Amino acid sequence: MSKPVVGQRLWFESRLGSGRDVIVWTVGRKWLTVTSAPEWDSSPVSTPLGRFSVKTMLAEHGNGKLWSSRSAYQYALTVLSDWVELALYMGRTHPPDDMTLERIAEAKATLGGRVRR
Image (cartoon, rainbow, N blue to C red; front, side, top):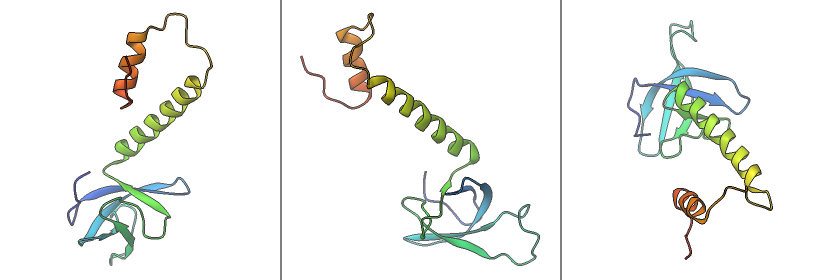
């Protein structure tokens, strides 16, 4: 994600699994602050919800992370879930019957591994 700008809408997902839209309030060199999106906060005065690293988008105190959108967060969850499923499958001691060296080399190249031969 590129560096956020003031006024940009982001998705905040807490460690507890609850999420909501937030608005970027300030952006500095290392930190940014966000405030509740208007539909979440009935207060006429916005209050910052905390500081987040501009580089990692992680909350200063580790209680959550910012995402470019809710769909980006949901996509990351799907990737993680499928990755874990693949890792568990790869824990098998024998390859499937139809596996070839070419397909193994292609998978290794896709995953950034070295291909020997």
